[in-house]
Length: 515
Image (tube, rainbow, N blue to C red; front, side):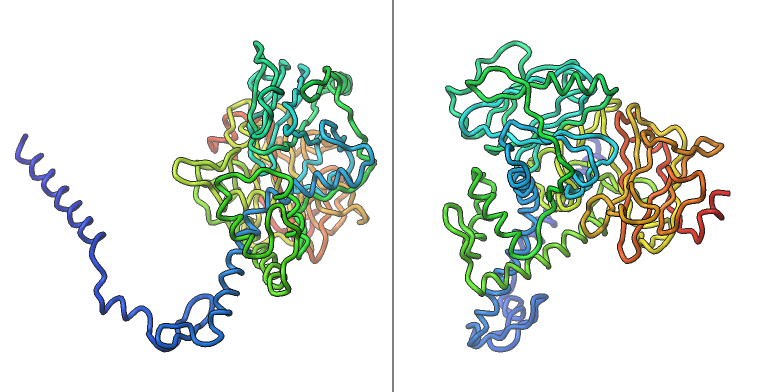
């Protein structure tokens, strides 16, 4: 070995040895004693507590237990967001539609039918439904055509996509879904061309967006088969939405914990959640037992929902995660490096993600591999933004102009959809003089294009200038709003920063800006 190389190896070795010595340095008795008094106050971020001869002073242990249970309950709120959202959604369909059951789909086409769903898309029509694998595998036969579909478990983790963004790229195919408790003798024999997908909960959800022309949509609806083991292949029953509101948004107050209790009792407990189940048990919520928290526990649970939601709002609206902020401070709603942005699974090599799942499922619903790990040309790109170009929050009392640059890199369609910051649902502007929609995009009839090929989206309480109605969304004074921009069939330019994301500028009057 050359002299310089030998010296370098020795230096690195000494540095590593020094770091190890520092890492394993023992805390002295004096240092230990200095950090906690034997008798006296202990100041913490959760309050000040008194010790008496190292014992919690009279009455202090009760305060500490309240703090402990409250801290756990706030984290349980964040933990349960995806589970509560899915369970409330399913129960909403059961309550709203007399004939609703597993393996049936609800047709969602109107504003009211979308209004209770977190950040639903106003551009495409949906088919939503739930299945159950507890008594047998479920078979789904997908017809060929422009269908965008996904399968999601009750924790909003996805075993896969179907349709044009799935492995068969819109050519159709058969999928068999098997759950954790599906009897082995009630799973069809594996056949050529059949995908077998394992879901981690007994129940699962199906999401289908039917694109294409009316005759294509009609054909796909007719040839979409859905049935459980032992049943003959049959077309899925599609229930009209009847313009009813079904709330998927997680409830507030004690109702949140009641839905979580219901969810726990209807599903398998996964090993990764056993510690959380213990925390719930200490708060009066336990599997296979009635919901009966004490008055003290109810007080803690109700306040934990308020505190937990503040945490969720901070995760969404004041981003601190690395890898998800893009150019011009638009955020990748679905994406980012592993461990930061939400994925179709929470499982990483050394941990399960927590904050990304809570953040995403507070503002949105459902994931899939194609949504969260996009492939060029088969991707669904979602970006969001919560401030204007000056870094100020987006408020309904002001007028804004969003400039969308020309040649949006989306093979299927693009849209800018406006949501309410409190509900995270479509902005409810239907009663306003200029209201009636929340979307501007390539599928909006009458969309006006600028001379240079760009587009303006006009937002505010003021009515739009004549001829700009299709480009306008009315906002509501006193309420905040935020946009999602979607690109379906996104191309490489959407991901490599070659395409410039929109700007959001506050203006006094639309006419001054657009002229």
